[in-house]
Length: 83
Image (cartoon, rainbow, N blue to C red):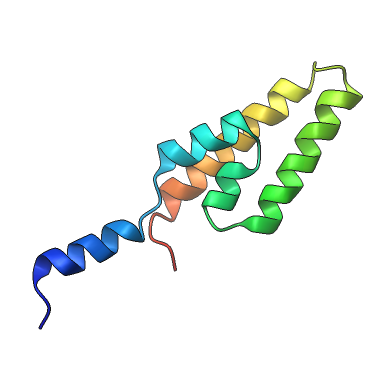
């Protein structure tokens, strides 16, 4: 039987950090989703945010940018263990 600290360390390596996911996606939309393991969704957020910034001259870009960060944060919070 493995010692408890090895199990705990392995579990910590598999945990998602909601704050880190939110900050990553706030810096570059979609990166937080990629950190969460949702690569396709991350790419979609990246493209969608880019188009919203360009297409609306930045007016709608902030809204999409913040929604992307919130989605990355909430996904990591709801599903903290990588599977």
